[in-house]
Amino acid sequence: MDTLDIAFAEARRYLASLDTRPVASRGTPADMRLPLPAQFPDRGIPANDVVRAIAAAADPGLTGNAGGRFFAWVKGGALPAALATDIMCSAWDQNAVLASTSPAGAVLEEVAGRFLLDALRLPADASYAFVTGCQMAHTTALAAARHGVLAQKGWDVEAKGLQGAPVIRVLANSHHHASVTRALRLLGLGSDCIVPLGGDKPGLVSPEVLRAALAQAADAPTIVVLNAGDLNIGACDDFATLCPIAQAAGAWVHVDGAFGLWANASPRLAPLVAGVEMADSWATDGHKWLNTPYDCGMAITRHPNAHSAAMRMTAAYLTSGGDVRDPMDFTPEWSRRARALPALAALMELGRDGLSEMIERCCDHAAAIYDGIVGLQGATGIARPTMNQGLIRFDAKDGSNISDAVIAAINASGEAFLSGGSWDGERVMRISVCGWNTSADDVARTVAAAGEALSRVRT
Ligand SMILES: *Cc1c(COP(=O)(O)O)cnc(C)c1O
Image (tube, rainbow, N blue to C red; front, side, top):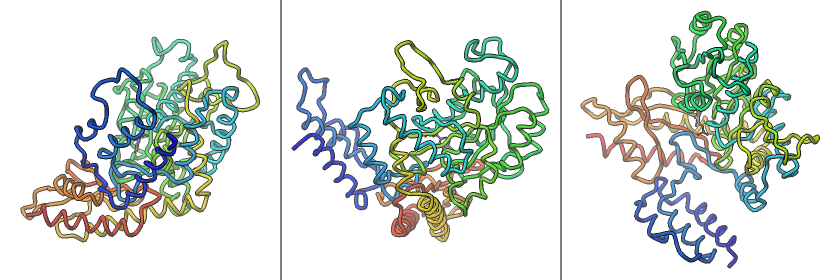
């Protein structure tokens, strides 16, 4: 057998087992180490044996997040065309850094970028970068924001850095994701530059709070970070109201839309993110709700010049400047896989109708799981999904919070996988539905597993 055939056979075996294998992995670290050499081998091992050994080592430690009953964190699976394209990308081994290093990588990325902006209903002339995930999408977009707000003050941050620069304020929804904080750390702004903003509605920034925060330092270069879908309840800021307020004060508005930005692809859900296209930059993921394999995030900005000013580098050995866009003018990476191609495949496989149908289906399944579980004795609904995220609390008969124990019991059953979180100081179970292949049957199995776990744990 050819080495690739072995890999394909292993991949097919795994995918075929998703319906029956436990969603949570059951292997111990020792199980995973056992099939591998104990030490770095002195002599090389034949490729076929290497692939078999790695497959055997990984198998007991694989979670079923490619399947339909994984609802923890925010994870989608991989659409068939996206997965297959990802495999071809590895085989082609293109360096999608410049049009000259991979014409295919650069041209197909341009098409992917155009389709992406159209799918998300963002300005057609926005700039985009395909990066490793939303973490690096924040880093990229906020580097463009840093350029933009400092250029307004006559400061060239790419040349001078932040030493002696006007101090940047970042006014961020207090429910911002920690990846925003880390991006600010990486950009030399530090987590202390964040002024957390709240309001009277859970997870949302109110216009009065934003206005007051802007007025506190009217002359400071300012970035405002808003949420399109926070990871607990999927809350979306009121972009149509907040963007004009921030922009009138000279601020750059950045949106964390890791998954929630995809609501804009559905006519039914788009009202949740009304006005999101007014922002200055957006960060999102392909590997969450678009259902590409991992290693796919997107940074998008309304300001291509600020974006490329923040990222572009030249070197004598690079040939650039043709009529095809050079990906590296917009990305923080140098050498990079052609990661736009699986996204292109997903967008083509779904099309506009299929994409909105998938987004809506996930939201309907999230609501059905929530309603099914909230109907059980001992479960209390904390946040019914308005998008694809919901929160439920579990209580023992004496009223004590047993959410973590119920989650552990569901996960131990192997039927479904969920994660916990904290909301208003209470432990809760989070439900996140992002998978293209979650079915009504998966919903029923999950509710049944929750019922069994609850009756076992609740004494
Ligand atoms: C997942 C997530 C991120 C981080 O995305 P990665 O792709 O893991 O880097 C940021 N913000 C939100 C709201 C998320 O759900």
